Amino acid sequence: MTHPVFPELSGRRAFLTGGGTGIGLAIARALAAQGVAVAIADINLKSAEDAAAEIGNSAIAVEIDVRKRSSVEAAFSTALERLGDIDILIANAGVSTMQKALELTDEEWDFNFDVNTRGIFLTNQISGRHFSQKGSGCIVNTASLAAKVGAPLLAHYSASKFAVLGWTQALARELAPQGIRVNAVCPGFVKTGMQSREIEWEATLRGISPEQVFNEYVGQTPLGRIETPEDVADVVVFLCSESARFMTGQGINVTGGVYMT
Image 1 (cartoon, rainbow, N blue to C red):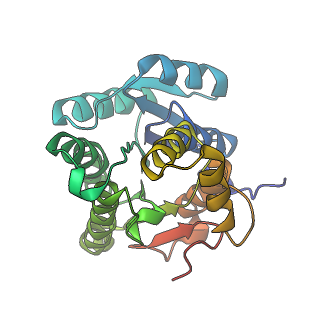
Image 2 (tube, rainbow, N blue to C red; image 1 turned 180 degrees about the vertical axis):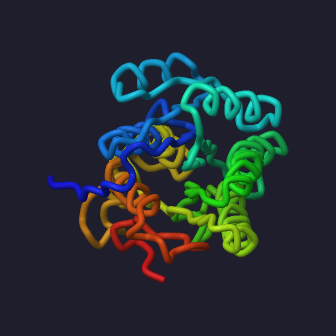
């Protein structure tokens, strides 16, 4: 597969949360291939270190807990010091649990919102302040198909991701006069460790087999296959490039046609 090349990204520096595995790791690889130096921030420092070692190209590993302001501030400051500057934020860290809405616990609700929504708020605010001082910058948040359509058994997750889109749009309007673009990607059924867990959970909750759940995901996707992390990563790279220079406040569907509005 041939990937577009965006020469203007070479030499840029990115701060990427949840970069040790899954979609985040694919984004780190794709950015590095464009010549971007990436600070891979993850709650699992070993995963981040392994990813940075694999990628090379000035990639560094930073430990972060996106639920805690002090941790985000420390991680961002470390990345600034080691990379010399930050031009791009990819706020990708996310979690999910699965449960019937009427049986959700407070702990499940809080866990999803603390990571998926508060994590976006903290990383966007802290990087946005830095970008405002510079008068330039690019933010890409990872939302979800579940941010466009409420997903059964994922009501709390959907709510947290709908919030990400609302925040993205509002922040984009506030920061546009300062030359800062803010967008989001909305992946569909992506083959990751998170999806593997969700398939098992959904199968148990619905009383069907994991194979049936997987086949339903494929059946809902007009392009006829499960999405890969690389499908998402290529769109993120595009959003960081000058080819997307007139795009802000968007929630870009990368779903293989599952959602088309």
